[in-house]
Image 1: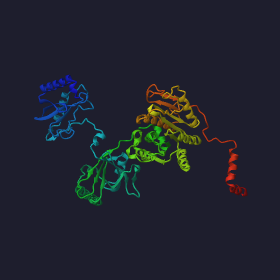
Image 2: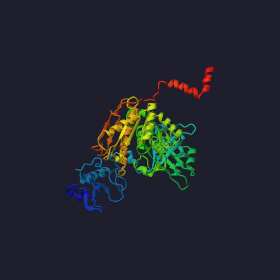
Image 3: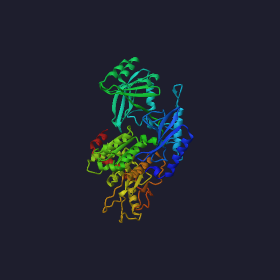
Image 4: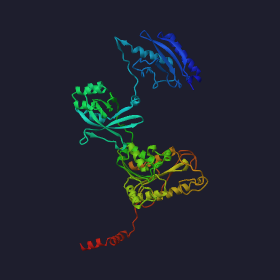
Length: 576
């Protein structure tokens, strides 16, 4: 609904303010109010600038007065340097970034008159009006289909090349969201590059060409036409470059570099392609500190993630963003379309084994992460050798995360954690998105995993509130006789985030920020939860042996066993 239908008083005051301005300013003429077919209120008017009448239009948007009116010329004309293209809106002193609802359309008209009057020519030259409007990088490039990404380090390397040198260049380019995004990946030859950097996991398109180091005064006069580029190369006595540009049988990227500036040109193959595509260069800002300094330690850590489904995929993505340097992913399942409703993966991964799909997701976030996958159905019908190999891989990690909510798999993870003295983190989402439980066990601090799980079961049973009218001895809280209830993506994400926080806490901190090692987190008013986000800390009492127990007779028994298995070895030892 248009604003003036509910704010007739404000609409009337706008008309009065512009009428008062017309009466008191001899430069404002012929104000005519109108209404568009979409019920936008507007007014055509003329302002006198340097003796000439300039026709303009002010339009009140649907959400006025919370947003400002727009002033633009009538017709596809360019009136000012401070204008969004021919026929476009004037960029005035009053803009969306400084507009206040108390301001009026009359003020906008006055601002338009000041702008155009200030820009009038003096002695044949148009005066420049200082630009108070600052655009962001995103605003500058939003209409550009071809973009070159350059870091400050990349630019410095290229500027260090000798002036008028021609050096081999490799670009990596990706087509995403109807845009081509390129970045340098190698400077120099393949055998002994001056610099190389590859984002291989992203499967980018690689293109070979040249980087040309130009004098500073030439970058702004680089032509786009093929013939002119050939002439420029010959003028600079770069005959090999001229030949390369003239070769219409191949695609030819050329990166032109000068101090503080880079311009990527791409010449498409074919005799009918007469002009080069010009890429918009985006200089990356200096990397800002977006993580806690203590997270640097994550680069050297390895996480075993058992279960790459809805919870596991989200945990993997979050840990990758946090900076974990290495993963071991274990899962025996395949991603189906129905899984996507609450998974961090998307349609591109349908049909892939889940650990492979999660590996690709991790490396999309950080291409330099090391990832090992085990496509093993833990606790299922697998060969003992496959299961043993997966367990051996898990045992080498700094922390183990069980994201399966499967008791059999939990027992396997618990066995590895206890025998190898590795911390274990796990969590489960309750049926129907009621909430979930997250927990951790740390060697010699918390109970061993199986004892911890027993304590969680006992805690749930002790709450005195039956689940769905029935007593429950476990905390999976399934409704066997009721219609199936599932948690949605947001609910799964919340529990996954808590699992991630527990894992990071173990990996980077000597002193934990979590006073308890288990928590029941409510997401709706049901069971023991009186309100969404109600959290119950659960105290875990230490217990159990955090290593493989050995009997007092183990040494003697081991010697006897070795003698039975390898009698020849004993004889050889005796002979010596």
